[in-house]
Each structure stands twice: as structure tokens, then as C-alpha cells.
Length: 115
Length: 115
Image (cartoon, each protein chain N blue to C red):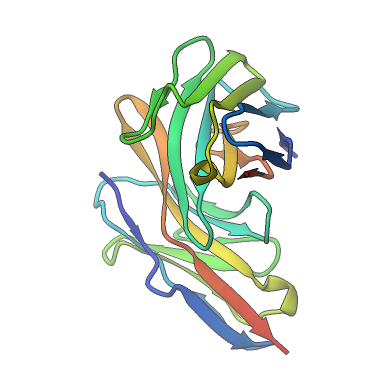
């Protein structure tokens, strides 16, 4: 079974600083990778995903993530964060199990952007 | 864009009563829906996977008689917490597979408090 590791449970940064949220997954077979963002008391919103093709994927709000097969990583980065980026971020990998596909989530990283 | 509507957003119920949570895909058909439970400051735990017209598949350790899942149509899945107890208090989130391949759209979540 797949597992997803988000090493940092909390990441505090100052506004306009760069940030990297780390994510590693366990499987070496073909995978689909996702980053989701969750604001307090809300569901998850898809930030970006990697299915195939270019290993660098970008979101509309300045985040990007790079799929690195050799390191089994999918780290999320943003060159300059805003206060509004404060949220919980979850990395997830899709897993095919028992003929059905499902998402396996990491434990999440709480990003706090301070003024 | 794709929307999954989840209701209610919050509910308070007395111990021993049952609570039903609805999850609707508004502009696409979802053959597969997922139900998650999220404890405070923790990741999402998959409870069950439901496919339209068939019985749900529950994850290990999830009581199927306590958490009843019905997926009667391609746009509606329901989770009923039967004989709720305070330990069932949690944040429940549904997601639908789709509308695009390898995509998952999440509901906004339901905060259940059992008193």
C-alpha cells in the first residue's frame, strides 16, 4: 500500500518569503500525485496535480510542484507567499487497490504566513 | 467548475440519535464517491468508497453498521451515522471521482458534534 510522508507538520514563514512544503511517497510504480489546500472548517481544494508529461506543474496562484521519480518526491514551492496562503496543505497519491482507485493522504503541513 | 455540495455544514445531535449527511455532485455524474473523517489537526482518514448502485466498500476498522452509506444515484451519496456517540464527533468530508479522469472533487465538509 502507498504511503505519503509530509515531513513538516508546521511551516511558519514571513510574507513575501519563499516556501517549500515537502512530500515523499512510497511507491516506485506509476503514480498520480496531488496537492490540496484546506482552509479552516472547509473541504479540500485541488491546488495542482501531476498525471503525466512535464514533471513541473503549476497552479494559478503561483504554487508549483516538481515530480521527481528518482527521489519519489513531489515538493510544493512558492517563490513569494502571501498572508492569504495560510492554510493546511495535503499531499496525496492515488492508489489502485482491489480494482478501485483512491487517494492516500499525507498528514498535512500547516503553513502560517506572518506579516 | 465542478462542484460537490455537502449538507449540512454543521450539525449538533444528542447521543443515541442518527444523523444523515448528503453529498451531491451538482454538474457532473459521480460513479464513485468517497467518505472521509478528519480529526482535529490530523489528516483525512478514508472511511469508505461507494459506487452507484452497489454496496459501499469500508476500510478496515470502520463499522459498516454504524456508518451507513447509500449511493442511490449518480449524483447523490449519503452517510448516516447511526446511534451517534460523542466519540463520533468529527469533521466528515465527501469527495466524488470526477468530472475528469484522475480527478477528485471535495465537498465542504460537515462538522458533527454529538452531545
